[in-house]
Length: 171
Image 1 (cartoon, rainbow, N blue to C red):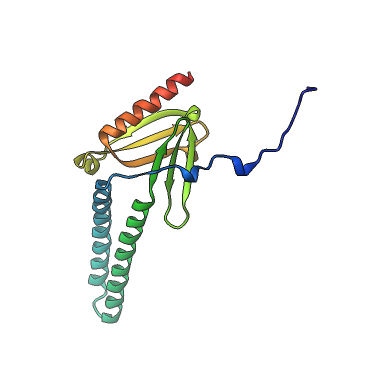
Image 2 (cartoon, rainbow, N blue to C red):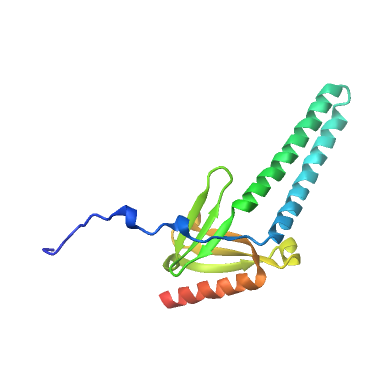
């Protein structure tokens, strides 16, 4: 214990993850998102129609319900587009980064030595467009796990192999 030192780290010299070149999701993932939004909008419109059927006398309320539904649909589409454009990912020598968020931007950095399992998922609509989602499970709970959607299937398989190789090297 006689050689113990506790030097101050100059935080201005640390590498910055903001300077990493992030990769955007595949453009076809926007189509997948639109299809999901369309399904949600159909349910909202169905609910609005039920509301209009049961409220026959109040024509002013019916107009407000239609206006509210229209505004809700516009917000759903707007926020879905913003969320799509903000999702980005990057793979570096020692870690994987995933950035997302609409109002607040969150960046998750996961070192390869914390990754325990990697899964590749293809949804019905995503498979039609040749896309997949990579799920990365880590030691330390579900809050540090990430899902990166909207990656071309072949690229997703390559990323999974890369991550599995990194996991094997750690063992």
